[in-house]
Length: 333
Image 1 (cartoon, rainbow, N blue to C red):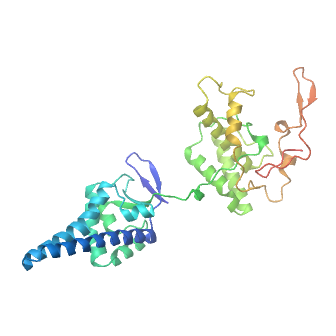
Image 2 (tube, rainbow, N blue to C red):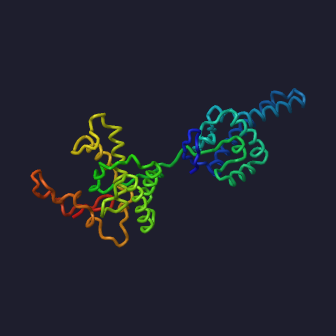
């Protein structure tokens, strides 16, 4: 992925098009353009058979410039960087800052393309694209443009796995205002890819990210909760808050309020529409006991709680044969 910075200092994540897709788009464009050029040339040859040789050569040069050079420039200008071949391959020409191209960009690309594509049969363009880090040919470098992919496979979009059910809502009072966006991004990337990591590496990364997150929030991670589960629960809490702000009417939910109100309904609806794509993905420390034996008893079903008079009473017991959650954690026994 290429990092393009706009004039407002916004980083854009764009996927530069590489040589195979660009070559296929160029072949489609050249097939269309050369077919049109040959048809026009034959028509002009028949229509101007009575003219002298100089006039015939002038018309041939004019048709070459208009069809093979002018037509691609006009198409890229009017479609903002999408020729017929690029539309077929899901590509687009954009400026270096990610904005749409204009006539001057298309003019420079088309003029340089006469030499590096038409006159050398694309050899120079292929070499330049292979050498360039972002797959740009000489015309792109001089025009300040880049060919990017517009269509990205939906299979590449990773979903953050949900936290264990017994951790949902536990961090409702956590202050997340001091957590920078870069740390949120790092946590999300770890949670979506931790199933692909070595267990030792995954555990060490989870510990480091959990420590950074705890330092930013001012509250340490609870004892006995695996760091990856802590990260998933905090990310889930932030998503639940975003959902409340987006979908709950102002004043319907009190900030930091308890009880099973509209906030809980929104949070639960937002938390559990999917299951973890990795199964038992949240790692446990190598050699550590089962998380169900070390989880905090105060947040698990079936623990002892105090009633209003201060006397201890048993809470509703969870079924003993309850299945483990989709994240790989069983509720504490």
